[in-house]
Image 1: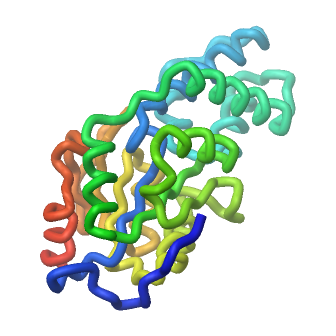
Image 2: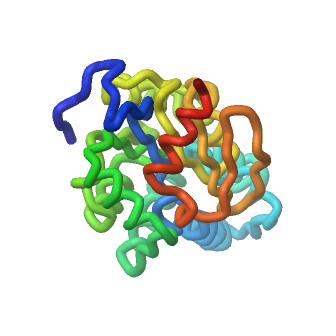
Amino acid sequence: MTSTVPALGTRTAEGSALQAVLLDMDGTLVDTEGFWWDVEVEIFRTLGHTLDDSWRQVVVGGPMTRSANFLIEATGADIAFDELSVLLNDGFERRIGVSLPLMPGASRLLAELAAHKIPTALVSASHRRIIDRILASLGPQYFTLTVAGDEVERTKPFPDPYLLAAAGLGADPARCAVIEDTATGVAAAEAAGCQVVAVPSIAPIAAAARRTVVTSLEEVDLAFLRGLMTEMR
């Protein structure tokens, strides 16, 4: 998915220093973090194992390589990662085929960013097949580009996905606002040097330097995001 990319350093409007907005997907724009856990519980049940609910905090927001391998090791299940990966993606696709609830404020925020021509990227640890399925409902027109977890050598919590997205938009990472819902995603965005808005979904996230915590996307609009950049000056 491509479009005209603004030159590095281009101001988006009215002197704003905000150059791009980079958004996570699961738990940030779509209410699907619980879907992943439900699928994991179901699959491991068929393998004869019960997942400890505390493990949800370990696997949330992370790449499948981390979450799946952790659950294999924690349970001792007799299944290889490649086989489990297919089962997880298949199960998740079935779930989103039945229901794909958006997070409150997601549609309004995406429409506002598009209306003001703010370069926007979707940056997810989910695989490309999952992103493309969700984009069909979320609206591919809202994103200049998308980055999937299986398209980078190192995904979240490493900074690579956000650095790739910023470069693809011709933006300075320091002038990008990232919206994330998990500590893993926040760590990736901060390591990339971005300004972060955390909207916690499963586990709490504390406020910190270059990180603002809100309870819902309904608190976030373009003026709010531009204000974060103004505070940096």
